Structure formats: structure tokens, C-alpha cells
Length: 239
Image (cartoon, rainbow, N blue to C red):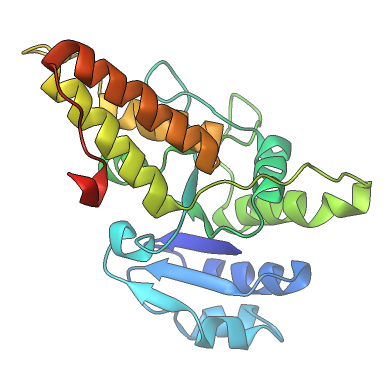
């Protein structure tokens, strides 16, 4: 299921326009970090007021995404430390391959987008190509582009192969296991220049591993632990 997450939307009307476009394309789950929509939002949500009335409001993006399996942030900023993982068609294809998982599409503030801390919660980043001289796209329009890509995929006759990917809890579990093994084996330096937790989050989200791949990763890292420390390492509740 697709969940649209708006982080502290600022301008009146944008949220209403988002609700309307969600209704146009058959999406129903709206999550808002920050304040409840204002009256003008309901006016612009013509015949889509139910989406606003049923919208869930959270204090933080972490709270809004706690029960989701995958998070994709939309951002106009690109660069060495803000790599682009997906364009809109690739994002739609990614979502279509894991329809049974809960996927959050995260859109930042109209003024400055997401904070670094919020962006770090989203392993994948989607960029909507635009005029380099004016790359900032209106919030409601950005949501429209994203949802249209997902909605239109079956209309194009595309049938991506569905993956039996594990859920977000299992990704967290194998990520933490890998980090623990790396720590036990002395992998980390005193002054790390790489955020390995974020690296593993991104890698696993891109892989969308199934149960067998997760098991193989566990087997590989456990063997590494045995070779370095002389003993195996339990997994999760097995520890």
C-alpha cells in the first residue's frame, strides 16, 4: 500500500490539492507531519474531503513512518552526498514489485524540504528532473507526478515481476546483525568517514531481499564472525 507523507506543509491549499489528486488516482492514505489542514485545504480538496478527514497527523517523520516497510524521499537536491537512487518511472516500478509491503512516499516542506535527519530516515531518494535553472517543483505537483507514475504503470501494459521481499522489521533485523558483526570484528575505525548504517539501509532497500537472501547474509556474516572471533553469533532473539 502506498502512503503519501507530507512533512510540515506550509501553504494553505497544497494539502487539499494533494488530497484531490490522491482521489483522482485511487490513493487513500495521507499522513501529515505537523499541523492539521486548514479550511482552504478542504475547499481545494473538492469531493476528496474524506481523505483529509481521515488523514493521520504525527509529531515527527519518525513517528509517521514507524510502521512502514520502505521509505522513498522526494528531493530536488542532488550531489555527492545526496545521490539519486530513482527517477519517477523507476520509483513506480520499484513500488509495483513489492505491492504487499507498506511504502511511504515522503515529501518535504515547500520552503527547504527535509532536514538531514529526516532524509536519513529514507533509504531511497527519488528525483524529478526539471529545468536546472528552476528545479523546485510545487508540492502538490510533485505528488501528482509521483502518483501518476504509479497509477499509469498498468495502463502502459507493464507488469513488473513481483518480489517476495521481507518487511521493514526484517530489514532492520539483518541490518543490525550485520552492524553488530562488523563491530565485534573490529571493522570500524576510530574516525569513520562513512555512515555504514545508512549505507546498509540503502543497500538493503535497493536489493529488496527475500527470506533466502536474508538467510544467506546472516550465514555469511556469522561465518565472518567465527573466523575473526572464534565463535558464532546468534541472530536477533537467538543472541
